[in-house]
Length: 461
Image (cartoon, rainbow, N blue to C red):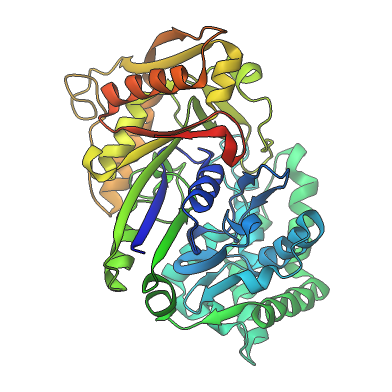
């Protein structure tokens, strides 16, 4: 048996359906391990043909099938969230041994409950000008790592005798940094929630609980050394699936600032870690996207169409909230998909696309697709053909450019093409339609089309 690794990348802003794709690939190819990277704040929904379903954050989307999960050093975890997830797996899915299916690299950065409070208070302080956050503190933990590395808590630190002292220092630094927000004003609708968060920040009882929970996570999780990935996973014959959180359009330096993640989401960081570990097997790169556009919360989305929400969102497992924002939907945006693909290195980087939620398109009887925008006359941001220009960089100038690019996208007017879906059309016919439209416009072949939540609802070619 040869070694093969499937790298799954969301080509949108997240919510592309990665969970069901990871589950399908892992079961179809009999993967032995799911490798996680990104942040433990997302929810990747997975369902199987036995009727089981779960929204995963730390465990991989092969867990329902008993597949092992390895949390790589490219992941930021919430130890308390991990404990809660294990409890949910026990009572919702009957998986009593969830931690037996999980290993965690000792270098993994931990987001504490205080990073979460900081994230939520900052978003509340923005009032009517939201940036958008899931609010678990994953991004805050990364930002604090950059400015206060001595306060970083790694998975390998969860068993330290002075963990309580480190957490106390984290809390104090966050209190200091939030002083102006704590003393400031909030929207009337947010005031009660803000006061609750501030109360937790100063509560000694909550601090004691937070310390105990961190220690408990360290005791229950199997923390492994930095060579574990190479020695125990990548050296084995068989299939590994890399499951990433976030989407390319939220990458810190290539998303549309400020509506971005603190972390990097490009697949090149996975490739670098594989190279570092000496992986010599085959790598298959799959880009994932819904058959329509979706984005939670604020930020540019040229095809946003509130009138389509009712027809596209039935059955979605995510609801809007104060921090993440409401889900917005619209016609599939090929211009944004091309941008995401180019940011990753171009069509040659990908071996195929997996298109999810085509069952909703089939049910609606029409498929709306945007291939071009109007109002793309600024040559700094758009090519003569109207494609979004790529600028590369990792500095303040890059962030400023991306913020201006986002403002340009707000001005864009999408040109929509509508494909009628015949009521008698079979799934093979719809696969062919999807594949022909996307192959022509994106230059990447379609390898999977999903017509439902389980592994049996997906056609692969």
